[in-house]
Image 1 (cartoon, rainbow, N blue to C red):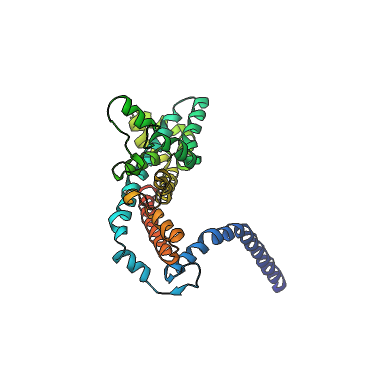
Image 2 (cartoon, rainbow, N blue to C red; image 1 turned 120 degrees about the horizontal axis):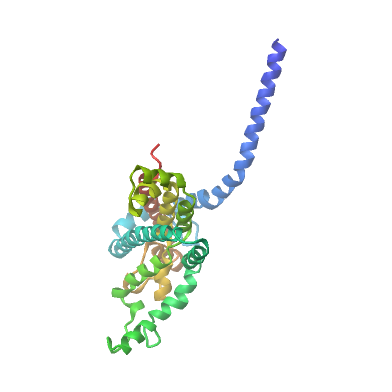
Length: 309
C-alpha cells in the first residue's frame, strides 16, 4: 500500500515538473524578448537618470539632481515642452481615436472590396508617414511660390507674398496636429475595424427586439460595449503613439528645436539633450518623466474601457 502511494506521488511530482518545464519553455521566448527590449532598457534609463553622463566619460551618480533641474531650472520645459506635449496629446490622442472608431464603423457598413481598398488607403499613412511628411506636406506648406498653399492663396489674391508656414510659431503647431491626425489611423484603427466586423449579430437582433430604434443607439448600447477589448487596445496604442510621435514637427520645420519651440514636444526635448547636446543623464530623466506620463494616461484609458467584471 505504501509502495503504491509512493509511486503515485512520484508520478504526480514528475507530471507537475514536466508541466512546469513546458510552461517555462513556452514563456522563455517572451520573457527574453520582454527583458531585452523593454525591462532592461527601462532599468538602464532609470539608472542613467540618476547620473551625469556625457557618453565619453563614465556616468557619475548625482541622485535626483536631473529631476530637480527639470522642474526648477529648465524654463523651456514648463513654458513650451510640457504645455505643447499635453495639448498635442489631448487633441491628437482622443481626436485620432475618435476618428479611428468613426471610420472603422463607417467602413463596416459597406461591401468587402471597397472596404478593403479604403481601409488600406486610410492605414497606409501610418506606415509611410515620414516619407509623406518630407515629400507631400512640406511641399504643400513650403514657404515660397513652389508651395501649393502659398501659390493658391497668391493666385486668389489673398496674400501678396508667401507665408513661412513651417517656420512660423503661429502656424507650425496647428499644421503638426493636422498631419498627426491624418497619420493616426494605425493598428488601433485596424483593431476597431476587426472588432466591429467580428461582432455577434445575434446581439444586434436582440437589441432591436428590445427596442433599439436607430444606428446611434445601436452603436452606444451594443457596438461599444461589445468591443471594449479592442477599444482599450486602440486607446493604449493611441496614447503611446501620441506621446512618442514627436518627429512630425522636426520633419516639417527641418530643425530641432523647432522654431521658437512652437512645436517642441518632450520627445524632441529628449533628442535635443541626448543626441545633440549629449547630456544623456538629463535625457534619461526626461524619458522617465515621459514614461510616467504614458503610464498615467494608460491608467485612465484602462479605467474607461477595461471590463469591470
